[in-house]
Image: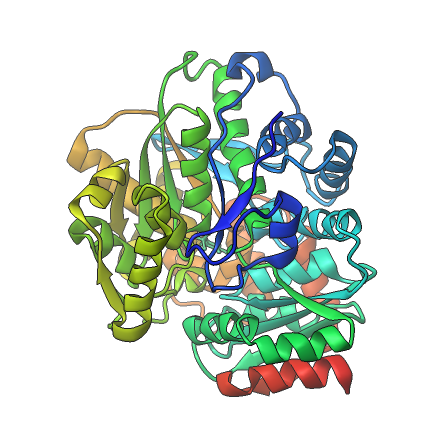
Length: 496
Ligand SMILES: *Cc1c(COP(=O)(O)O)cnc(C)c1O
């Protein structure tokens, strides 16, 4: 297999191997790493119908992570997708009301971030070994609630690594916050910031771009990397479950060989849906990619008008992991739709930085025609959770409900009956208060655990281990700072 190399979307760094790109996370010029071509599947889908999740993962990931040996990659996959997941299927499909819900929440922290963050630490430590890196690798991560916990769960006590997580105070659910604050591991740190997710993400990117800080760390044998979806090591493992879902539908004879499906993805940072787009470009028969937003509908407006404009109110919603106005991974789609033109991509990103908006060309818009935008308000999300529950007994979380509502609208409006997979990105237990309010009305008098119990009884499914964990765990973190203080916070965590 010929080697694939990675280049920055902004042109300032080129020719990195996959493992180097994983180690770096973000390119030096602030761009995101992209492969120099998108490889096609070198297998027939029908031939993999009976393959395990792990086997599909290997067959897909090897095409993009070309400098990992078979032995290395298989070891990473084995370590990641094991009994940490509460089902051997890893990512099962559930059919309810005209759609297949691809449940991506069966990992340790009961959100879809586990799908990639279970394997990222393995990919990263393997990459360090391959490249002779002996520095400590410190992961800096901004989180809208789910990445932080999933990344810490993956990196906790991994030798040679450390992790610092920044989350927006008041911008995550209580369950998400407790999951983070109770995280074990001597190499983990959690910091709440006075600001929203975009503030946290921007400040983290700034720290990555600070060459003086980089030199200061290097002198102490530390180098930074990212566990956010800007890291190619997040994107690649996320392609796998779309392929696996398609194979499952094929195996169950829900679709015929070669038949197209649609996917509908509740979107924030544009990482999950971008992975579906990669799957399509690699040869998976996907027709429409339905991009579902909550009230922060900057992506919906973008697909409608070709103008990306973040100058608007940041709205805190019941789907906090999608409360984002700067969707980092869109940069990768821009780059592709501009024909891999790094100069054009850099121009757009500079416009975003200076004026908070940019407009793409007609040609670029044409290149993204496979995407359909939609959005759902919080009221619509609550109504959708209830209607799906009343119709089928199936309980979905608030993020998944954004996609479910957007898909319902899309199907009505377009008449498109293509079999559709909805990415189900979190367990309802993680957002139990909003979910129960939607189903049972006012639950403000009940304490957190009573709400969880009520949900368990309504949904008829047992508590995932993550719920039991949160009940008994002690709080271990209490740091807090302003976005402008994040760099000095990292310094004090590392060296004091
Ligand atoms: C992160 C997250 C999303 C958004 O995914 P992106 O890849 O950022 O678009 C949606 N739902 C949940 C539950 C999440 O944790």
